[in-house]
Length: 449
Image (cartoon, rainbow, N blue to C red; front, top):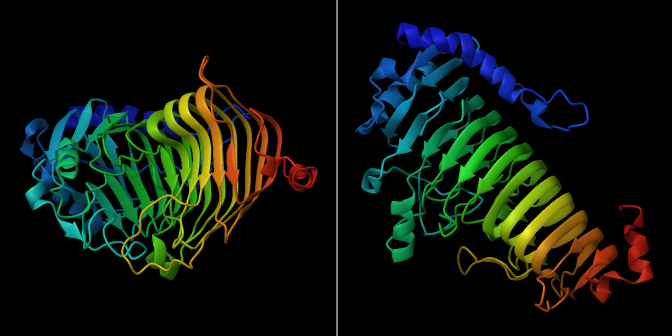
């Protein structure tokens, strides 16, 4: 690494990591980020040492691959930082390795090539059985990793730009051959931190930890146009002990969607998402703010979402599944949510999402139970809520408390709509559905609320 720049980074980079990624000092501010401690690595290299050029034109794929090969094979004690100086570094997709930190300086941009013809293909996820959009394989994520341990992607709010427009246009024109790539996907990995960065213009989902455990995503900004297709913000998928905090997301699809596999493939793979915490999230989307599903065939359990601020939303809170999914969705707690301008405040539905193929089992019915939604308020919410379970698998234990979703002045909303659901509701405005207001049902929720 060049001496002058490296000296500056050595002195201040570590301090920045400590300041931006430490647990808040205010004892009243809860955080889950301590599940993965931030590591300070002594060994540091720069992408420039491997021929990287930040002019926005030179293709740096080989430089990234060489640098990461060096980290993998030298295997320094404590791992290695790969430092990306200010500049625009155009590159094709690349794989990370264990015990590394990808660190973007302020004004550093890693930008995906728009040469889609040479983009590598990888196998479909076993819990999906095929690409999510198209049969067969799928395009490798822009930044990828499989079977890794101790990986940090961070910096001084540098940017990772997926340049997704070319992919969105292929989707719109129906010329996609395979499923679009995510910006970041880590598979079968543990002890992951993604923080202090901006992600923009993902071709597909943005941050996708799948079959992972002990994952922290905090202090990130995720941006994509409102009309960009399927640009979910953060999608924990068949993963456990995931912490998402202190982030801003504005995309064309769900801000956070907890998933666990698709129909018969997810049922067979049988790996749930569990222990997911989402806290202090702000954002906007034409779809959902906090979502579970619709791919929930491995089950979803023990999700906490709190202190959420949403604006210009399609749906504030959306729990979604379908026949053929199977899986158990349980112990979901969502609280302290404010939404401004939303088509629908709360939706819990058993008829959402498509199927991978005709071989799904229509008798594989999902179970959705033990959901607490409390301390939720909203203004200019066109319709407060819809809860539609399945006749052969009614939703149970749906408990609402202190929910006030104000409508649009001069527009009569349709009120709550419910079917095949049991639970209870107290201090809910507009008045909730009759299915949730019997004294027996309210009593069943009282201890929970």
